[in-house]
Amino acid sequence: MLTSEEIRKEMLGASEVSESIINQIHHERLLQIWVPKIYGGLGFHLREGLSVLFDWSKIDGSLGWMLTLCSGANFFSRNLKPSIAKELFSDPKTCFGGSGMIGGTAEKQNDGTFLINGLWHFATGAPHLSHFTLNAALTENGNPLLDESGSEIIRSFVIYKDQVEIIPNWKSMGMKATGTYSFRVNNARVSEDYSFVYDEFFTDDVLDKIPFRIFADMTLLVNYLGMAAHFLEEAIKIRPNLGLKLINKIINDELEKAFKFADKIEEFLKDLELISSEKQSEIHSFSIGLVEKLSHQILEIYFQLGLRATHTDSEVYQIFCDYFTATQHANFRRGSLLISKSIDF
Image (cartoon, rainbow, N blue to C red):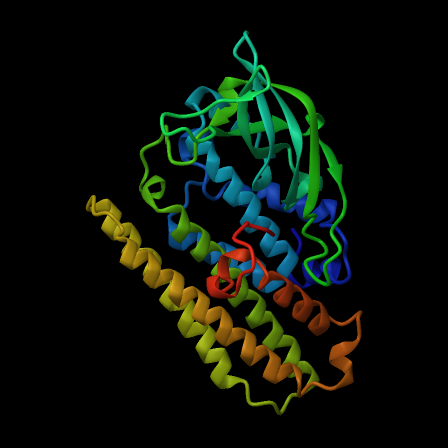
């Protein structure tokens, strides 16, 4: 088994997660932390999973991000018919990933299948996925299928990797090893059994009842905290006399606050209480405010590190680029500043 330091050395300057690290991830079933135990997954509680994601984000930003997004996609095991979920997750190397955008169409066929065509962006972990998830507008005879309100019907699908053309087009300054690529699908035939709806569950766990907004906020937030903690470790190596105890304490305190949020959420749901929109907004505001606070602190420290922190082969530079690339995820950008409401990266 690789140590944290060995993993960091492998990830420094890497453009892809190595086979040895991927094998360790599969061995520890880390991509299946949210998959129910009845399907062979780890079935972690929210706090347990968040702790794992924080630890791996602290090892390396790209690695933690990939684990977060791919394990998050494997959460959809809960939305699939049990027979399909059992079939897919009987393999410990099953790894979902894909795009949340609506990038194509699914043409309904007479035999209960769909022909899927389209282009989707920002599929994290693309080189390592066994299956891709995507959202498509349903059509029949080339015409959109509409629901009772007259809106297009959108359905999510799981398709095998050999039905996908991966387009390696990531150009950002950081998160280079996440394997976040676009993918194209041409006339892929998919059974209706491999489709699902986000808020329809075939399992009955507490985790099923957690609003997706909270799940996304919490799982991404621990990535920022992990990367910030790693940044401080490397910064102090460059400037040992920097006073970083306060910011270290802030990170630890805020991480514990996030864990307490997770505990309270599960307590509410166990008691069959709904998470109010006000509580969801409170958690979202907490997350946005914390990321902004961390960003300003990291910039203040970076300004004091000198030229060594600009060396493109240094750990501190890689963490800096990873962190500020991650901050461009649409989830934590202030809505009032967005030009477009479309979801990206």
